[in-house]
Image (cartoon, rainbow, N blue to C red; front, side, top):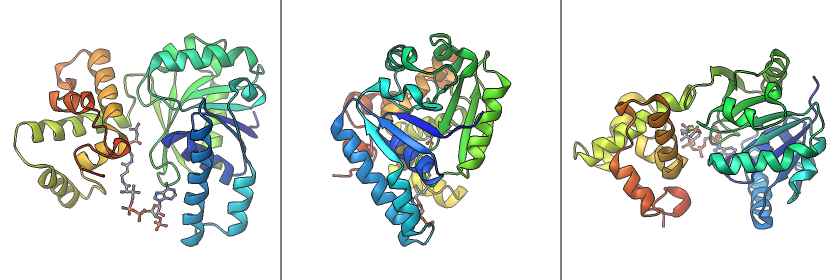
Length: 283
Ligand code: CAA
């Protein structure tokens, strides 16, 4: 199935990156959010990130202008009804995602492929609450979306082959690489990454090392671009905790128990970069 128009739900960190990448690849993008201010900020950020690519000679000023011209915004979810592909990138709370799909689905044309950028929630469960479980998939981008090469494609139990083949082709057209995962808690990337981050928080909690020594050990000792605590701040500590909880509940193994220090930071509102304070102070 040919995809030309793409609806993106959520103008946050992931949503604006996804809109950026699709517009640059030639798709018509309609981005929606309940907040007009979030939409305005997202468009300004896409402009800034495209400009960064122009200044590093990755794209031309004409590419940037064309991409900006392909992005439209709306606060009305129903406006996405005629899109060929919809990517939900709202907040990582299952009840919120179910509510969005319930509101959107009655307006969708029958052929629309529906996807979620969820980093851990069951695709089969999300799909089962829509009218098109066979046309539903996990479409998981990495942050920062314009930079990271990988997209995880997650098949729910009912996902059909045509939907999977269509999304594989879309991933190729946006210049990224797909890794296919089956629908188990946190899929591949976060199944492996989050326990490492959680272990780094335990390492801090138990006093094995301080923030700087833990991060520099992993950066310089294993060539990671960011230390695990710096990366946790970058992802958002609330997101890290939510994913650990999905792993802990979904796989029922104490090895996925979230570190009490991670829970405490989230309870304090220390969520990382986005709140100005996490393991580091950004204020
Ligand atoms: N838009 C466009 N370009 C961007 C960008 C953005 N938002 N952010 C960075 N860039 C570009 C820069 O322009 C630069 O481009 P060139 O290579 O052409 O010079 C390049 O990316 C590197 O950026 P910087 O030089 O500013 O900074 P850096 O070298 O320190 O790299 C980083 C920054 C790419 C974020 C790097 O630190 C990194 O790879 N960190 C790890 C990121 C990671 O692991 N992400 C996955 C998180 S897990 C996830 O997302 C899944 C989940 O569900 C939680």
